[in-house]
Length: 211
Image (cartoon, rainbow, N blue to C red; front, top):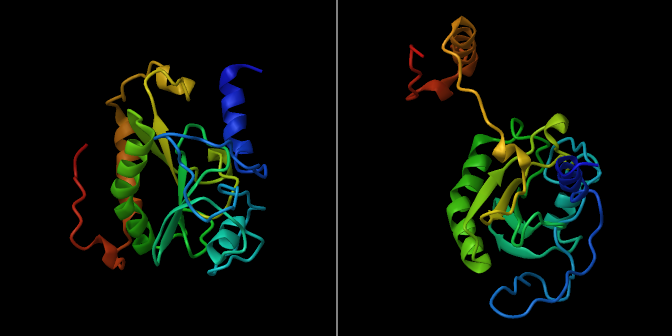
């Protein structure tokens, strides 16, 4: 198996396999944060939740929120919790999880998404300083085809370092967008689908008329 598929498989398996106690760390990179003696980071989920605060099916994230499953907890407020990922792609790889169960990003209320996004600067700055990383990715795997295997909305914070080569796609040469009719039709279609006439959420928004 080539390195790229192995990495993609690793991302999927990181949410499917139970975790073992992490190795002890010492010094300024020690990230053992959370409940004393838990020995666990973020845990896996059976997938396919159906809404409500605890989810219709078994959901390990809901179990963590309720305190029934251990996790290395970095942050918590009334809306969300931030924990370490079970099998991090890099040291400090964390997940921000809403306390209420929503199976996908589009099923998550804007107010909850806003609350999560508001915490990104606070959490990412702390994680970057603790891990002494150069940068970080913010990632959402939304839908099965996109790699989502835990069907409870969550946002990844993945610390990055120069030359870590986490994703081979970062080295791909990309073609510029074509200024043709297909592109203009796509823009028009997306604009037309953004807001329905009776949708008050469009108030105050500006949608450019030209490409």
